[in-house]
Length: 134
Ligand code: CO
Image (cartoon, rainbow, N blue to C red):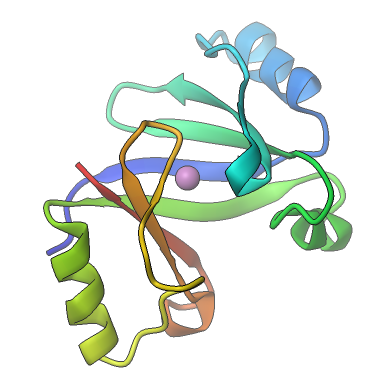
């Protein structure tokens, strides 16, 4: 079921400052910021060849990463995203295995225009897991 690592996401308090670190200090190419109001975040991506890094900044009231940044004000690793071939089949398999799917269990369209789901960190070694249909 589990495919390749699509990205590792890092929550940051200041997307412009974090993008500058990746661009100027690390010499990486950073995409333009993309607002995702339905996910409560603004994102940029950094392609590092074998996977991507996603930088997330809160967008709007009640952002799902606001509590994370309250606990880790300088930012930190927020989730890992794995690709799956069939997100509904993956969801059904995971639910049957006792894993908790966040939200109402229906995939939403993520930053790459593809369906995504999030899985409860308590069921995955304390790590928030995103699945994206490749
Ligand atoms: Co993500």
